[in-house]
Image (cartoon, rainbow, N blue to C red; front, top):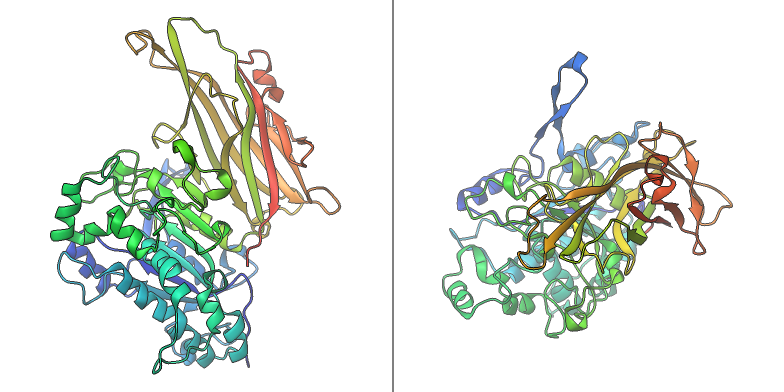
Length: 532
């Protein structure tokens, strides 16, 4: 029997990053799964009849992908370890649904000094270009199908994301066969075009813009890391990053995908914010996952905007802010949150763009104070039991902060949410999710720069549940209803604007309509989610 690819279920390559201490590198190399299969225990709150806390052991995203397909949608993936021999694979398993592992902390790494980024990227490219396609054919896949339709999904943790980028931005576009080189199974034109070879690219806690060394890398820091280079620290100097990422154009930032034309819509960056739970021995920077600063953990495209302006939304990869640490028992890589994002980004069928528009604040002002605002936003999916995306000042240190004049000046983009209709518990009501929105007002005396009376005051706070389903014949093919959580879960239909977006006024909540400290609209745009 021969097999073909079943999009979107392409081979998945997990890429393990560097460890901070040499003993952790050794432990990783001795682990068959390089840490991607380490079980994680969580305590969840339950009702008083069963006790207040129970421990739930999560099997990690890697293991969840290996669950056999069945009527239970939580066990629908059917991936297997690609390194297995044919007799070890269940009969009827499609070889394209295979999991592969690549490690950066390789056996030839010297103590406290890693190999070069390019050497690691070459090893990864060899696995993807040569080894996996040959194994797929040996396991029964149609060779012509592999030649023309083969592609992989990359999931990378930490520094491994930069290794993947080195391959995508530097090595693959320049790939050429030399006289005595082995001829790969896959078509050369697909190797030279990363868009054809990489189906989707997920990074978890990757320092895409390097580590924070201040506004500019000092010459002393650069010289020291170039000479001593502990843990390959010189790899984060902007000059070095530009070299291995092939970013010769100085108008391109180091977290840019450069001139590869690799689509940002194929990328998801999972960003951590719990630096307090990181258990490494180094200093844990604020506004980070304990290692990587939040504002350095996402990807962009195009040249740097002029006058230090922010990147346009279309030039920023998809991202999610998760309140987890860089690694460890409370780390990002094996967390529930990472799994829920990964499975919906890779295999979901709906994307929702969520924003606030026409935002206005109507609280009283006095001339002696300057006013500014933290806008908190949190998002989750029904039945999960924890937040999937958090932009909150406490505890995540990443709320949207605006002064009074900036409020309402332009639409405030909140989140891109991915959903999977096959996971909905009811086809009748569709996919359910909830978002929390809160706004705090701060005031600062124009002379003392503080408020001697109060730290802040909350002027808006509410939770909104939304359910979305496919509606044939509707524009934009979906229907949506809402329920304010303070209003006895009464369901109402969303309105629409001229663009076909779902629109809901903040003051449609009866509990808040009379006070009206804040007015504005929640705007949700629905997209069919298919890539490649």
